[in-house]
Length: 147
Image 1 (cartoon, rainbow, N blue to C red):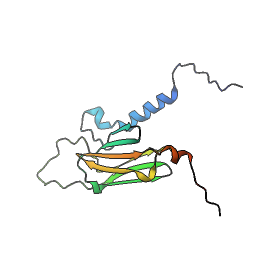
Image 2: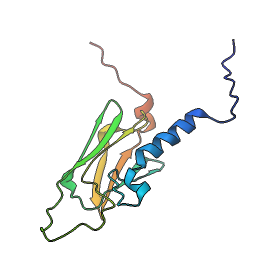
Image 3: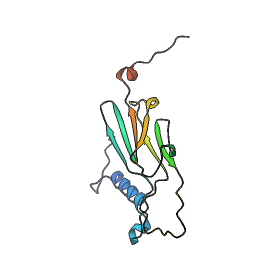
Image 4: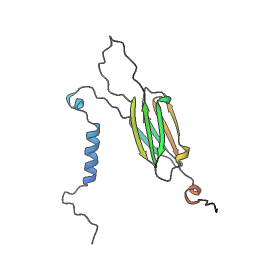
């Protein structure tokens, strides 16, 4: 028996489902009616260099102490928790298009990355996370102690 799946519609339903999920995740009722758009999940750029992966998380208005990064089961979680500063009573918010005070993003890491040597720095409103790749020796050579 063949693994071939017949597709009468001529396009990939998995891609369609992902596109619909992305749309529903990012759309807000206020966007449709022209009110403020509150973006609460920061954008991320990802660059793979020969020796490391770099994630750039755009999160203006935070301090480095607001971030928490941890790895568990090959998943890197980047989150932030901060409080919004109080505005005086006589100030009305006319438009608020972003708020990255509380967010959580997760990234799957393969075994080609050294999870123990991840470094992060926060500068100019961007959290830069560097994830080094394992050397060839780390990937292929495992020392086993004989008891």
